[in-house]
Image 1 (cartoon, helix red, strand yellow):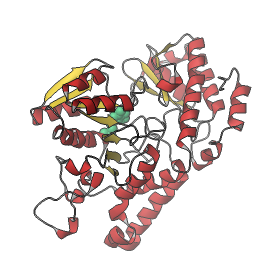
Image 2: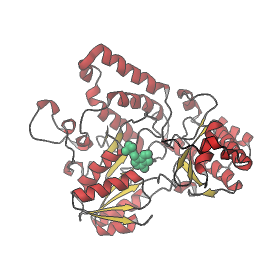
Image 3: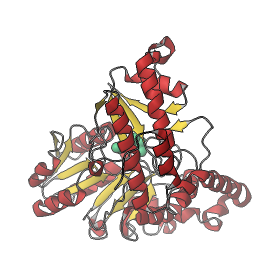
Image 4: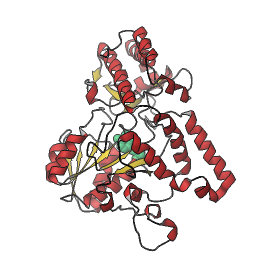
Length: 406
Ligand SMILES: Cc1ncc(COP(=O)(O)O)c(C=O)c1O
């Protein structure tokens, strides 16, 4: 039975027994930094840098021949196969391409072609890009758009349309019951497009056994693929053959180098690849996956929850308002706190070496990436937060200057 640590020594004892401790040596994080933003942009594993450098070398050496000699042409599918293993997905059901926004568009459009009714549904606290994409898609395809209150997506599935839904909410970290939603969708001729952005690489996902049909998700967060690393698309083998992408580019064609005038989709999720892939980013993701794929997903999930439980205990002792579920089983890899002056608090934390993020209007998010963080660092970060709040050091004028990215 896990005991939430009461002191730094307890945290150090957890680090000594941590099965993921060896993974930390793969990361090159500047000294003096406690990186609580792996849920936003993972740090670089040495393998990512090595594989990105090898791709640059291959470019210089092989020039255009690299598409064949270095296997660039299949890289998006090879990365899909590696990620499929991590998320409990079937072979051939994942491809890595474009970004989450574009992939949500493609998947939701394809889902409209199969759902019982031309209806798009989204809960009102979903990540903004998901909201914008469904609204635009609804206008383009003359599908009705229904915004439903938070938590009511499952009831709305009765309508038989397409629901866009995060597995882990970007703000609260609340987890959605995938299996229950999918069962309800199937009963009603509805489809769900899952946004796995805050779940991939931190939760022990089981897409196939939970009945998932369609999903998109980030690779630059807990998978540490690098800034702008392309996103994943999942399409279950049960329906992928019936799906039409609204962006049928040549890289999703069954025979791109036959240069045919008419589009014929590839088998499986690969049909959702559209144009030429970002090889340098895929190469860096390949290196990053060398680290993640060597770990047990169950260990990753357990450690993230334990670090989150530690942070929650300390935050409550400080009297802070929690926006995330306290029940570990209902929470993803981050913990959100409501702090009215959250922006300057996040800047003051950064000045003390603790990187976290702020989500307007008042949310401070602390992310607990299990591969490179220690329990002792989480303890120390919470000490620093307590000090900043009790001394009001966050209120210095320099911490109020707004940057573009928060
Ligand atoms: C839940 C969620 N969905 C979508 C996105 C956007 O992804 P992209 O920038 O790859 O389109 C993010 C980005 O942080 C996110 O957190």
